[in-house]
Length: 132
Image (cartoon, rainbow, N blue to C red; front, side, top):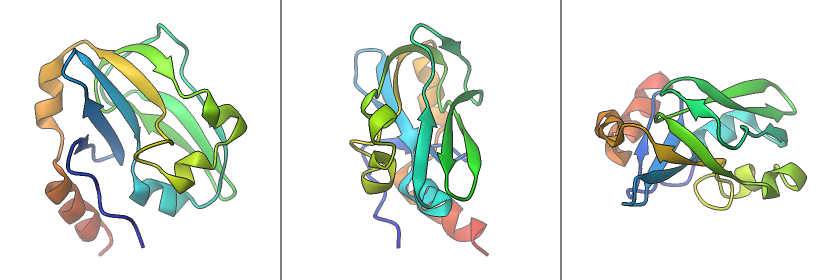
């Protein structure tokens, strides 16, 4: 069973989360629901530092024992940090998708995009509806 989705961030329909920091940056990763669907994650291809990404664009790749999945940017911006710990311990995403398993930090191109993402309650309803 998925852990409750943190209410301090917003979520995309592609099952990514974005956590703004109030300084024009945000951290992103995949949701607990997404890691649960993927099962055991064995490899993460991180984005390049300095890469400019657009909202909805594939930014990283997560490989599990059962599939390979793109990770889509929940917001547009420049990649300013990546979680290098995932190179040696990709299972951090399975263990703590919304914390230690973060994927990248972005310098936001358009902070207004955040307003268009789902809050935790809307995302909960979305995945509940998606399951039926």
